[in-house]
Length: 163
Image 1: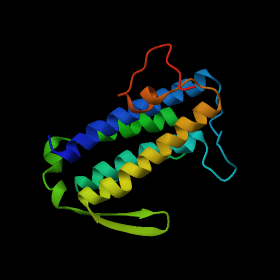
Image 2: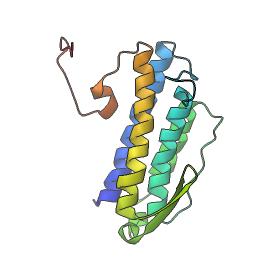
Image 3: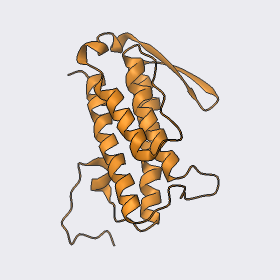
Image 4: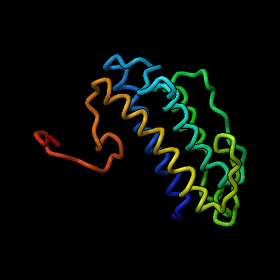
């Protein structure tokens, strides 16, 4: 599997993490509009944006138009829609991915980069940023999530403490 196909598989795994964030937030009563600062997107928006970045990375690699997510949809619905879109892609769809130059808007700034740099410098940092914000909002509201919940790779003994 090439790096860009792995990126899509990883994006689906990250959507699973986001879905768990939404479930844990609901379990602990975290308001969907909760944020860490007045001028910051709330939890729901952070989840929506992160889900959207999975599509903004994968679909251009296939030379396809990025499907839009319903901005008014609940976070779980946005995640499910993004997952469905990503799972509709097949390995052959990426046959020209490495040769593509991809474009998007970073706020008001146009971005135009070769596929590998587009993913490494733009998509992955933004996806990680918005996932981190969602994670931090949960932590701020007392939801017991940790690094293992964020990346799915780490594990710690039950009695482990950073303090």
